[in-house]
Length: 192
Image (cartoon, rainbow, N blue to C red; front, side):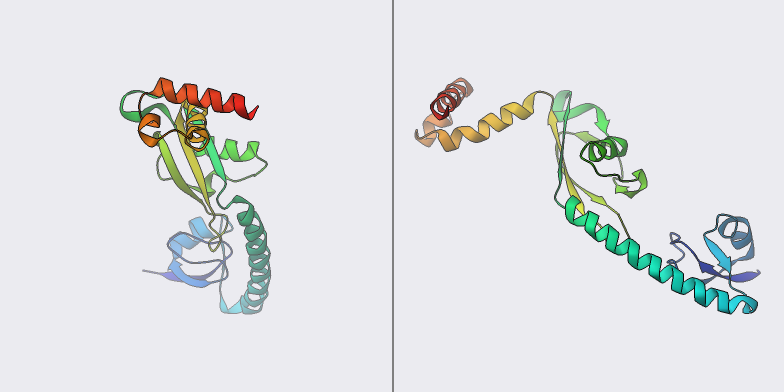
């Protein structure tokens, strides 16, 4: 089987990274890598061009890594909240998809390509999820995706405030939900 050497101009999954010279099957190289501008032919006649191309790619790589690192510092730990209608057992009607995450990031001023969001399958249950954003092969910030029952976000926030403002014993606070709500309302009016 005939092979050829090519210089990769982009990272190619399961083949190599940008700037590497790799050996591939002739058909794969000529029919896919070269036409898609993912690689250039690495023949003996164009060695000088290859070395120049490697330098150009290394500079571009460095710029992209630094830019991705700056973006990563802002994204890391960012929380995205989604309120969804929920059926039995916390299963969502619909789901939270990569596109939903991209749109939510866009609303907060971050432009991220869909292919950069590492979500294997749509989120279909209420809960907290860590989602990796692959800005660069060496720069992968993690964001938090919080999926809640529609209308339950406000309730959860009120419940979190109640134990702090409530000075009654734990047994009383743990009783029924209406008492906790009253305590929360009282605490809120005292603060006001």
